[in-house]
Amino acid sequence: MTRFALDGLVTLITGGGGMIGQAVARRLAAGGARLALADRTAPPAVGTTSTSYAADLCDAGAIADLVASVLADFGQIDCLITAAGITSLGSLETLSYEEWDRVHNINLRGVFLANQAVMAPMKRQRFGRIVNIGSVLAKNGGNPRPWIDPSEQDHAGNAAYGAAKAGVHALTLYLAKEVAAHGITANVVAPGPIASPMTTSFPEALVRQIPAGRLGQPDEVAACVAYLCTREAAFVTGEIIDINGGLWMD
Ligand SMILES: NC(=O)c1ccc[n+]([C@@H]2O[C@H](COP(=O)([O-])OP(=O)(O)OC[C@H]3O[C@@H](n4cnc5c(N)ncnc54)[C@H](O)[C@@H]3O)[C@@H](O)[C@H]2O)c1
Image 1 (cartoon, rainbow, N blue to C red):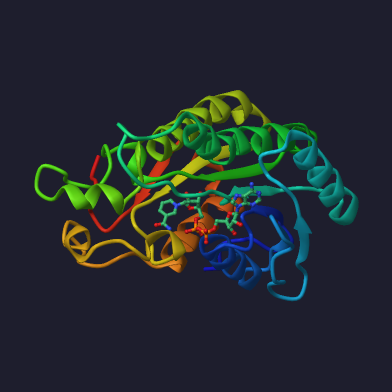
Image 2 (image 1 turned 45 degrees about the vertical axis):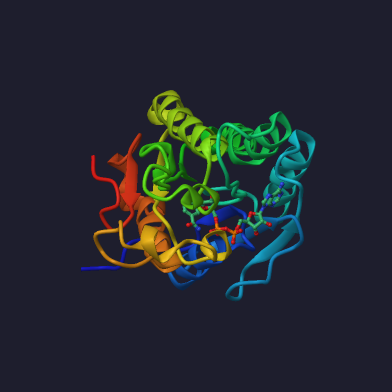
């Protein structure tokens, strides 16, 4: 039995400097992928073949330039992982229009732009793997239980975040159908709370809602992303795969 094949796959990771982006980068590098890591500031290199790029991943022009640079540097883009994102906390009642737009600009619009930008090169190659990072918060109405403890509302992602991630889930299903006949798959990995800067203020009472009894680890997300990038995963598309310790089951 050989290892799952990632050898030589050129992989663009947005949010490549973040906790999950770096964990995905380490996994893929260990499997032999060649990495293009993009973030607000050029992320730390991972492995021996990674190249780092600085880009505002809400900006259509910056994303077009990024994809052109990766194609110039590597000659191809086989996989795209969208792991750039921001969190947003607090109640819907006090959510400002500005905050709604700030969250949607990167968490949904940024994913749309990156997905769209790699479609043409992947179609030319007749190969592609797109993995968008979604969230359990797109499915469960959020983790806070204000009817038990109103203060929980301040500590776990809000409606703008959940709505943007639900948009990512839906976008990915449309994408999966549009590109399926071109050798390209598109899937979502939807984590629950993962130990990262996004969950530093996550209360113990909310952790106790997770049947596994703990936060997830970035590498537990990365392992699933890595599988979806392999050549063997060619028949897995349009899936939303939950990694949440049982917090939400569907
Ligand atoms: N940590 C969690 O509990 C959790 C749970 C579910 C989903 N997610 C999702 O996973 C993804 C990665 O999150 P993480 O935990 O690694 O967080 P993180 O904050 O460590 O990483 C996010 C990265 O995105 C980058 N980024 C944000 N806006 C950007 C912009 N405009 N241009 C360029 N880069 C930008 C940040 O600089 C950062 O490096 C996000 O989409 C997040 O919503 C995280």
